[in-house]
Length: 171
Image (cartoon, rainbow, N blue to C red; front, top):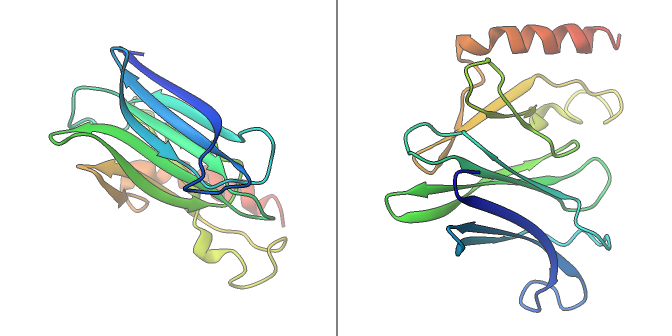
């Protein structure tokens, strides 16, 4: 999209793990590699990863590349990265590790700009077992190369109410 290509592959990188292949995101612009992100090996023979090109930060003039990769383990984790153009060239922002399927990119307020939406992992195991845990949404974005928690912004009220209705249905 917009001259940006995101490719996910599985490669042996001895510097990361001499025995397991590593999910690798390669971002090219106009046929030139501008960034490479090495994820954590999961122990699976195929990359359980996804890359999407989307508008996440509006302060630059190019869309960003969202990359999520499963690290292995029960109830955990997907590493999430955003690759974006900056005044210093293309940079990788490590958003964090999250429980769930890895598809955390969504337009939570319908304004055409994507956010990273997951449950707030701090709540998992806090009051009960994992299976008995329920957590509120955590909504993150990237601004000027930094991860920003925008969960309490009033524009996300509908997203929180919809999520609350869903978890109340579990009871």
